[in-house]
Structure formats: C-alpha cells, structure tokens
Picture 1 (spheres, rainbow, N blue to C red):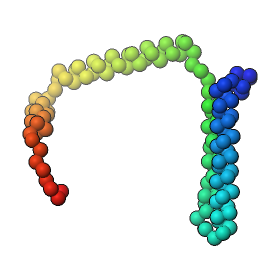
Picture 2: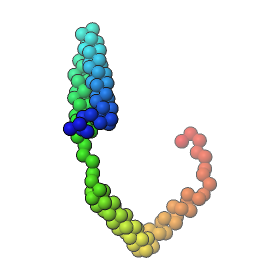
Picture 3: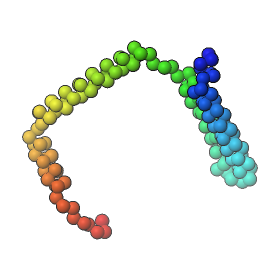
Picture 4: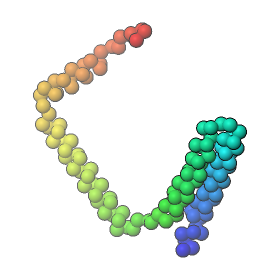
Length: 124
C-alpha cells in the first residue's frame, strides 16, 4: 500500500490531481458567477467543469492502480510482436512477387507523372 500511495510517482499524481481539482473548482465557480450575471451559456459550463473534475479523479485512480507488467508478459509481448513483424514481411514479399501486371503498369505511369516538372496553375 505504501508503494501505491506514497511513492514518488504517486505523490506527483496526488499533486496533479489537487491542482486539477482546484482549477476545475475555480472554473466552475467563475462560470456560475457569470451565469448569475446573465450569461446563459455559462450555465452549461458551470456543470461541465465539475464533470471534468470527476474525469480527472477517474484518471488519477486508474494511473495510481496501474499494474506493472511482469518479465514473462514482456517476453510474450516481444515474441508476439516479432512474429507479427515476420508475418507482415512475408506478406509484403509475396505481394511484391505476385504483383498484377496491369497494376504494375499503372504504378509505373503514376511514377512517370510524378517525375514530370510541375506546371504552375495560378488562381487555382
């Protein structure tokens, strides 16, 4: 529990939450005073800022209780990513080998157009 709530990272999160809630509270109070002064749009904003405060609290809770991955999970992730990269590379090689001649001609045509000097079209 000490590592969860009193680590350096957790203390930084606590400070960020306090600053966020303070700013949201100030903004809500400011919008309420503007709404009472006659600005009808501020009624919406005076409700919106406390919602932002609640979302900040939810984010703080999620970041505070985020679990670290184990070495085994990291190894499995690296293996999976390596497999995905190799499969993608094989798929690209197969696609390059079995390219449609009509598609290859069209791609060559587009490459030739891209190599031509650009015309200046003023006014367009």
